[in-house]
Image (tube, rainbow, N blue to C red; front, side):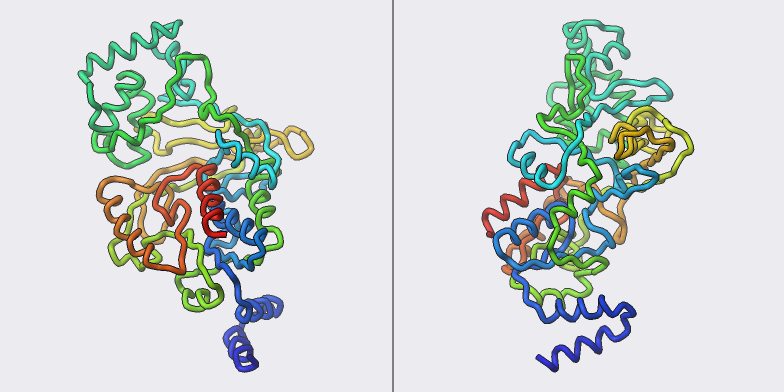
Length: 400
């Protein structure tokens, strides 16, 4: 033991912070039941449940902060969603009760607005949208208009996203509110995108502009970072650690690994890289109380380079923690882009080619008896937050 301790002291002799030096040496000589790679929702839930079950857990993350893509940071009294807007919504009572252990949620309801060349439309598509688009007043008139345009387009069995969208909302709404936004988001013509992407497009013949229409919905008061911090309370966490570059060292610390990073990255992309869409954010603080009057405005024309603008203060009704109006505002313009290795992966491109490649990676993963792959990147699936948490809890049930 003395020799091992001495060797690790030499390894970290150049670390200026002596406390950090001592902590890392201590971690090296400890043995954990689980090493959790990734301090996002999946990793945080598993770590919390494992510790509750009496297990010793170490959580590490490549970033210098916890909470993954739901990370929020406070600027000018506003909780800024650094990696894009995250609105918690679920019909799963078990998940809702679970997250409420770690945060109190406000009553925010997602009601985005679509901006098409300066014309504003209500989202999701509802009677307000249909009235603005066609002047119709009753649900019967709106349904008849959609059916008329579907028949004119001659669509029976939708073969791609364009045909699927027209069959759901008609040609006019597709052209103004779907086509440009979707093609910017995915970087491909709608005729080349699979129909399933838009099958669950919310369409309502009511005056209901609650986008998710979920039984439980809101934003954690104090931000998502605070919620995840509460999940990880009392758990050993190391940040700024690249697991794959230090894999042998960290694998030796634990009996089992919970890996939430990219599955293809774990295997050094030996079968080729899985494809994603990425997002770039331009965030600025404005010396005004109100920029657009809504948390999210989608820009659905093809000429505007960004897909949407988020005004973060409206996730918490423009108030600070004392209930006072905030004098400034912070906005983020979102630009969708092709993903390249080294960039942040956001949306899996679940087309036939990539799904087949993932299946081969999954076979390799199943052969890794010491490793459990989970989460959005580990399973190459787009997950809503509630589904990530439900998936992690299911894994806990099996594993713990």
